[in-house]
Length: 123
Image (tube, rainbow, N blue to C red; front, side, top):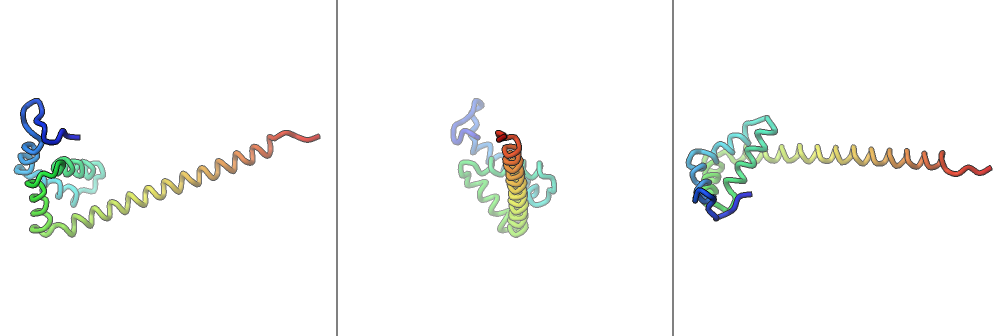
């Protein structure tokens, strides 16, 4: 996490860095990466860059994102990609949870069977 409004050792504040990056096209890059990449790692890094640019509520970078999405008519594709990615992640999480609960169910049955076969024997 960044330090908000506090200047770092060089005396440059987070908003100054965000504005400089934005002026150099970082907000456009974030949207391009999110919309166009198929690579999960690059997508994640694009999301993180977007978060870093918007952290602290920088109004210049907010406006740049707004312009890119609204005035350049890119919002539909952008939000469709985000929606599809979240649905895929949700599906993956659900399947992982299902597999884990099936494994736990099988383990419990194995443990129960083991208890029944290895319990004390009556003569």
